[in-house]
Length: 239
Image (cartoon, rainbow, N blue to C red; front, side, top):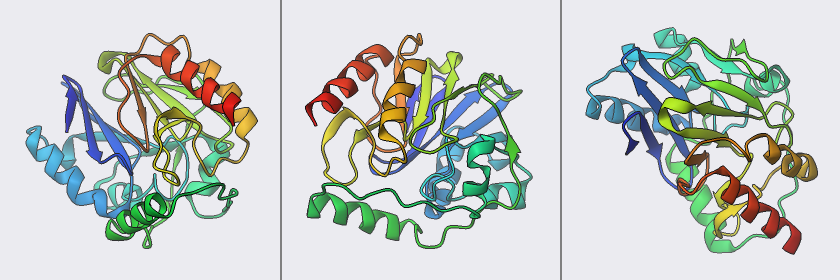
């Protein structure tokens, strides 16, 4: 799905990943689930591109529903995979953490697990090698993506700001569709290691000049970062 001149999404509101396209090639942000591989190939073809045009893959964090096809892209096509050092072990499957489940609705939870199962969520391949990136790094990739430290959901969660796409990719620093309840709109994401820290980290993107706020789960948000953060804080106060 094309969202803008340089911006594409694969997957759906349950689990999504993103592509940034420039004349220099394609940068992928997050890798969804293993079964999103076919979505990636199809979207590239619609763009007049191929896997050979991908210059790098940036992970917003190391959870299994964000690293789905990452190792396949790295191993079979030589694409470097970037992740914050605090989540590198998570992406390699060396460290696993299960945050509390919290409140849920049966229908929403069933939809998430059905989709994840259909898209290969039970056959995740962890990374063998990663390239680490730090807060504030501007990567030599299409779109000149800049990483922004967003600890809370996981220790090494990052956002990725790409000015040419007018977008900031936030992974699970926030969500616009709660996978456990089905509730829509900007709100704190579930399965978060440190909810208070995650909420505080939103200040890192609050003033960014970006229209698109793009989470790993939920509808793409195009009303700007400050409004998204305002709504998330209101939801958090009400809980």
